[in-house]
Image (tube, rainbow, N blue to C red; front, side, top):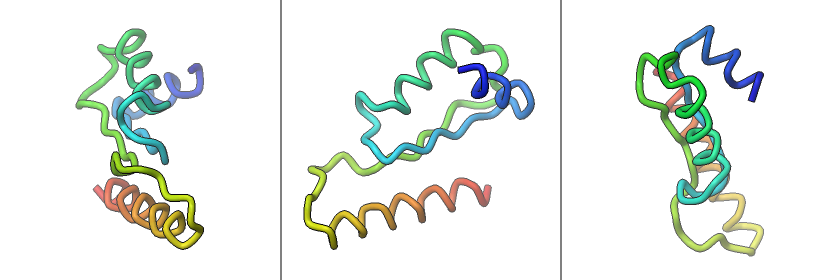
Length: 80
């Protein structure tokens, strides 16, 4: 958490990218800890870029498509 909080202190903004779902994910845990430890450092709400909450496919072709969508979504957020 030290690295995450150090970055937040510099930018006062946070975007969390996680290949998991929003619900019960690592992104949700990081977001909760940042809110507990450094709420007043934030200038804007925390953004989360996560996969759609659909069953995760096991076929290779469907898994590749899922990651491509996540990458495109994260690129849109970084362009802001």
